Image (cartoon, rainbow, N blue to C red; front, side, top):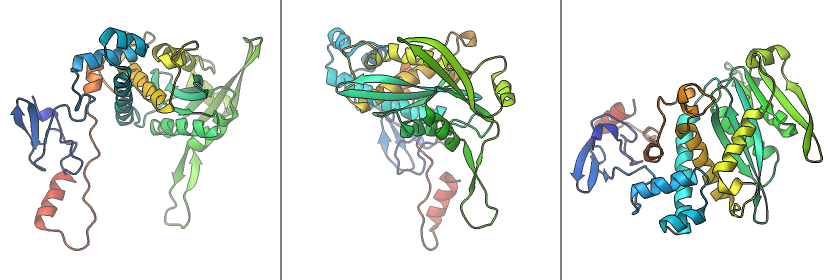
Length: 357
């Protein structure tokens, strides 16, 4: 137990999310518990991780989630470990929420993306079809996120590009997509930043990012086979496209390869399977689990020195194990004092100076 590596998970504590501030003490070793000297609350070392308040040993949960993140069906896990399917589904949903929190904390940070590719996966569901849209950063193979909807429309693409925008700087950007017309409209809406009014009245004017290029790859098919490919620029100049691509061409090969990885690692995405996706929420949980494990735990063969996409993007400096991923604790937002009329007490002023500075 190292109190210098943990933080207080109490959302009402002024010291929440602060590491190495000297406010965490060891309260007990059997069972292990920490104590925060600011809010006087005790908490388990498992607080904030996937294993919090779960009775099954951590090794079993980690092993089962590793199998789920690599395409193992629920029936095989139930037969091998004797764990009921509702329990496994609950673990998968919790792992998906945990992976989404890690993704928002570490991946959704502004960076120069350079080239982004986006595409959708058509998923069979009991009684209908679900569309899963995803995007990736080409140079690092970093999965930027995904969105799920029952319709392949502009709203689905807008939700996907909203995630991409949180990962991008307002810099020259090449977005390679297929011939779906909604991409062009939504990318143009996404790649804008408000211009300050400098004291003038009215709303800020939205200014397009400099060097925005939208490339489309349209495939011609006949009898189920691709017979031709047309590449075109929906926005931007060839000079900017050549600057961002170098010697490459406009393509969506990397995101299509990532689609194949997701189909192999998520049983409900396989083209011919009896494990159809029953609910959108469970499919979304599986997407975040597989995507986070792909970013942090899977060395990519096309990257140098066995790097993971997160290592290539500078997010981490080593390959994460599944155990490290599930034990990662996402710190909450820093404490801000509530607004108050009148003068604050000396104790409140000292508390604000200590923890809200």
